Image 1 (cartoon, rainbow, N blue to C red):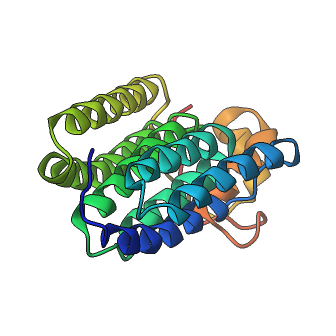
Image 2 (cartoon, rainbow, N blue to C red):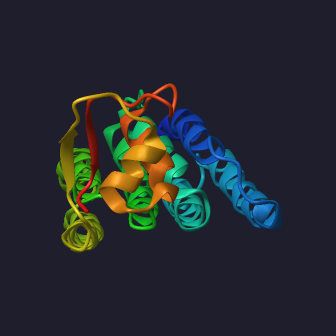
Length: 222
């Protein structure tokens, strides 16, 4: 991707703030801190020299997104990427599209590492991912060319297929109705013959106390 307008340096500086927000939103593990700092140093250099070498920005962003997508907590990092994709962008469509492509790449790496308990969880994540990625694909095809569009389509397709396969191998959620409000331990024993799964019911239904679950709730099929 070649850029010839020196004014693009300003747009790159604006996008750099969006990148830092997505990358630094999730703390990296202590043993990886030095690696992230090295990548951030390279990224800062690319931003600082954007007027003379604007083409260095894209690879630097991609390296950062690849790193945190592979190494950070996948749940938190996926949220950070989704937030960044929905945030304000530079007025230069080319630079914004390049940043968004890197975000989608990082999001794909994060989302395939997530753990999904239920089929609906995986399908919901897939739907949310495809909506976010689809918007970027359309813009990438217009502003960054066929090669970038094809590359991003492969990334999105691979992540989507993984989530579909994951969903197919997970139990579905079912609605459970009881005549009375029971404790999570009691219901976990009745539903699964395993009181250790009580926390699962509490988390799934977002109840305030495990002592009284609603009479209509969701749980994994037994």
